[in-house]
Length: 443
Ligand code: ACO
Image (cartoon, rainbow, N blue to C red; front, side, top):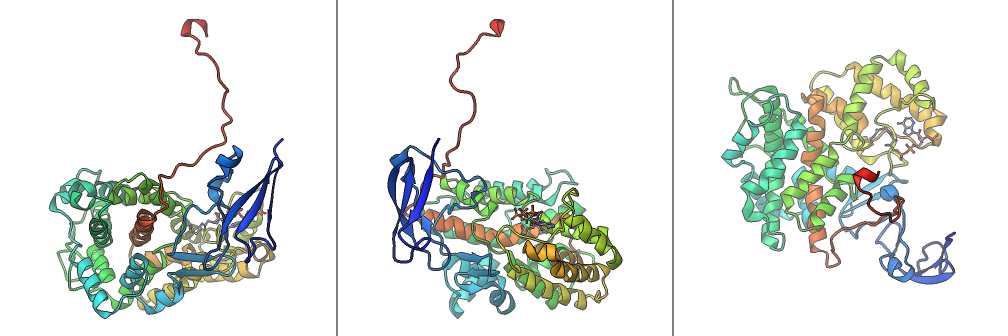
């Protein structure tokens, strides 16, 4: 039997120490410790196999840092989310999505001229190659817009081959700007195609989020004016989803990129991963649950079901793998939800009443309090997006649109990291041991 014992030179991962002693089957190994600027330190186990003939085992990566990053920091116990040091609520309430994009990509908030140039470059890359329109027409009319997103984004390398050399920093930057600029056009076209309406060309006189709403909701038959309150709400929703450090889709993008794959292919891989119901699909599930509950008087029944271990029902939009406190994005999302419903004259929307009452009851109930189950970003986002006019199939598409900048920033950081190597996890093999082939006639 193998015994592994760890100890550090002092308190936990000691501030004064830069080494940890790991005792593996009686042999003491000195493993380097690295301190983050905030948050937990890490123990470097990259030489563990060479020194001990042993791997580590961590399904779901709950204790494994896969990279060093300077982009996003989360403290799940305190409910903190920082992008390049800036709290998410400050960015969402005082900044814009394009400023957040600049910050995530280049490390700092833009100065006046820099921002004007960035905005200009994004605005003038929003159109898609005309032949991509033909490509859309190959999809079934009733195709899910996420299926279209995966296909079209994956195909971008066929249309923009001049920005696929990952070793050229200029091409990397052009590919980044192209994707941030074109994603709203691709997403709006996926929506328009799925409902049988004509594509709407991007408009350079509108800002990023207003242009997106216009491409989704205007039709050639009449004038459409984007409500500035709704455009601001859309922008804020994009900021809230822009990055979330090494989550499943971001790790997928990094792993795909580690082989040297082109950036368009890597982002398509991220979109495919995000589509999974445990990741990007929860906002739709939260809305479905609120609709199923329907009225405030039915809440106690659902709370009872959520607490019953023999019932698979869970309160959707509650709980988070990392946040064991209020999800800081949920606070801003709740406020945005109220603003959108007020603007649209939907203050008495029954689903909002159900959501608020559900939250109030759950936050006083010992089951949810003890398990630290708080509303997450998805709890209010479904109601908000539906009020803005989007059908549930589009919710994950909007998430993908906003997360594209996070994926790109993380992909760029990885490519520029001198430590970068192809990602290649190991395994604990439990299959058959060596055996000889037996011909069919003798089996
Ligand atoms: N309703 C009722 N009970 C819950 C809920 C919930 N929403 N979430 C967790 N619990 C309970 C579990 O039954 C478990 O109880 P136990 O300790 O008695 O067995 C305990 O709380 C811990 O739950 P885990 O599933 O172990 O926590 P984990 O961190 O693995 O899961 C998750 C987090 C998947 C988000 C979970 O809370 C959940 O299913 N929530 C509902 C779905 C949801 O809203 N997902 C969106 C996440 S945010 C995002 O992806 C952008």
